[in-house]
View (cartoon, rainbow, N blue to C red):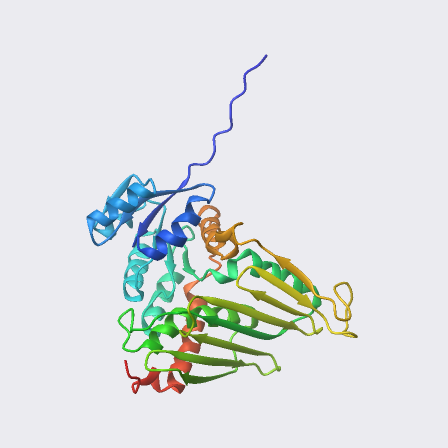
Length: 346
């Protein structure tokens, strides 16, 4: 009986992590550990002890308190950075100059001018060194199912999104106010989702409800010349992260996704098109909370997309250039709010 050789798999992609804080260890590293063909190779933190602890926990071979050592193709194939916007920009710039791909958590820069400089660097980067901005929500399996279910039923005409959290309650990331911190945190997520589906708006309108000295409810309305509309509700007045989106197509089919877990589809009687629902019927999909959490929330999907760009030398699906449109909408929101309220009490 002949013996056969097992096919040798492609060597795993070696990742370096810069910033092993709570977000990285709660979301990014668990998702990375489940990604085929990926290996955490090195960890960098401001304190060497923190880097060593994270490396031991996630089975990385190397650790350091000098993050620049990770931006080296001889050490890693790609870098994941999860810290603050100003630091993100430094890492992205350094990695692009070194020819190392980088997954950067949002927001990737502290302001539009800094992001514009990074976009220019991105344009000149080699194909094997993509930049991926970590907006996880569009990569969630339940959100992708929502879009897939709606595609056969016309263009999305209405996009309503509620994204409310319990934080921030104090200025963060070197911003001067809670409102600006909130907009750069949750606000960029919400605007990114709307722009991916509807494109750059023709008009932006923003309104703020002042709940108390620290809490805000912000409404952002994106208008389009052809009558489409996106309404985004962002706030820090909940006791947890609340996520709910409702999309309406040109055939009147409505899809509602609640907390990544429940998807409901309805269609009004007499609406054009066939093949989904009639009358007062509702089609519901439910994902048990214990099943595929990192897939539903998009952390696994965004890392998988980044890795495909690395290994197959494909364009990034979440570029700095696309993020620039998000920042420009945010700039208009801040302008209408008096640059986030120089009058805000904190």
